[in-house]
Length: 248
Image (cartoon, rainbow, N blue to C red; front, side, top):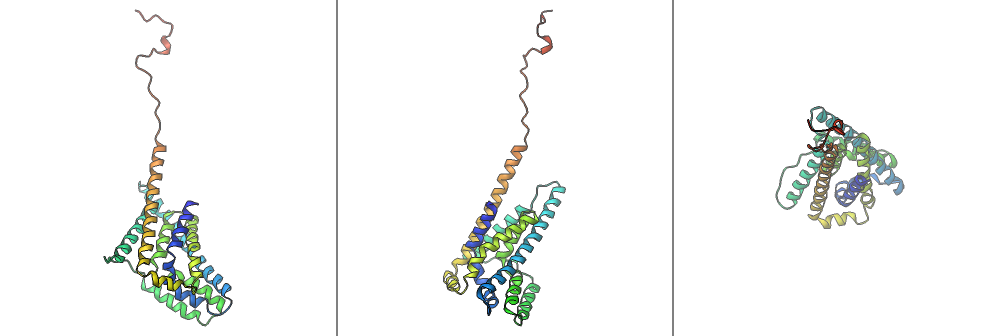
């Protein structure tokens, strides 16, 4: 439960980033039709793909942990995920402060598929269009999204990976549902502070996860230590000699 609440909290606090990234797509998805139905279709499409990504990432993390265990080292999926979150947070934070460092870019093929998919949906009915745009959301070049996918991989479990992405989705729904009600103006007003806030959230979440992992490892190691009973005193008399005369 603590994992889910942590992901929801981090996602909710950083979801203004999503408003800036996805605002135009939300507007496109919700054109025409009943607004509530359009919102449900759009967010439902996002939920399906987020859960699928979490499931796949969790399975890959489990394979990574299995490989590391077979190689004789401790499971590394969660440590790698935490390190990635910390690294991304530091790079973005330094960039916001004027120290530019390169970040990996998403493959161009993903962006081309995204644009083609959006153009194709314009001729579809409102409900189907909103659902399709929600499904296409995972193709966005969004480092924020893929950091939580990495966090899902760190769980090394398909079920828990899907649960992480479900929690991430829950945290993003309120801000994206409020698009058009002052969210964009708030995003513009925050300006430079928004990257600093999101980077700080990811950095703290990565540090929290990494520290929690090592605390658990320390406790597990302590629990695995066998307690050896104290040896009998050297000058004790063996039981076989009780009642016998010790003199020659």
